[in-house]
Length: 280
Image (tube, rainbow, N blue to C red; front, side, top):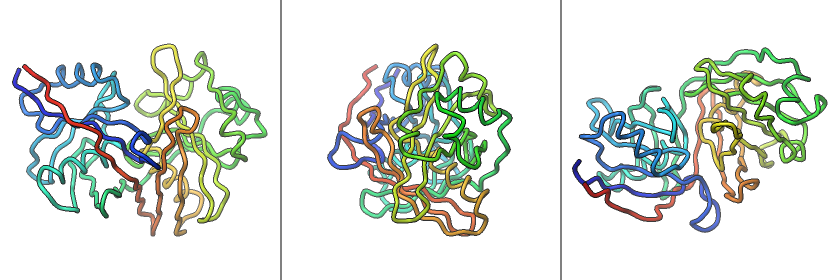
């Protein structure tokens, strides 16, 4: 194996450098096969690790791996990888070729914004009471209307009636697998929207790891799907929201969501923490 340079970043960072969602980016992944990329993602054990490759039609091609599997799209890896591509090649307008398509990303300083895919959505099969029980909530906590949304990666988007209900959610590991997406993965984004641009959306994102249910500090793909939820419930509306996530896992994060004429934009601050070299 050759030597491979990598960088560690925090994406959707708030005040200070040790906030937001951590990410590892390999600067040049040529020579690494699928098994090696998966093994490296498992070694770093962050929510995602990305690998930059040449692209014929974009600034770079990007592979995104969790410790367990490859993803077609994810928000914080998109923004963090764009930050590294700019550091390597220059430019505030980046396009990244992913399995979900070519994603445009633009920067103003260290704040990056991606344009998500046009969303699609479908209804949830679980009853309100059944969904609430899986999420450790009361049926009366669930607001209108939960949807499966896909603006790059399908996830369950669940509105609740109060920020207190967001904080109270405790998904049941023994039942969570019943919430299966179109690709067979179980993920739930629980949020409360106060209903105006001046208010912050309170959110949490849950996913399984083995027999446990884990929580993500900041989830750009879910924020994009929140934009898709707004498209479904408020067609044509212009939406601006500041989304707060991560307090429950002591990694406070800030995401910015905009919906304009059905187009979804997700942004946040990216901070580079350090660099390293994987020796052969």
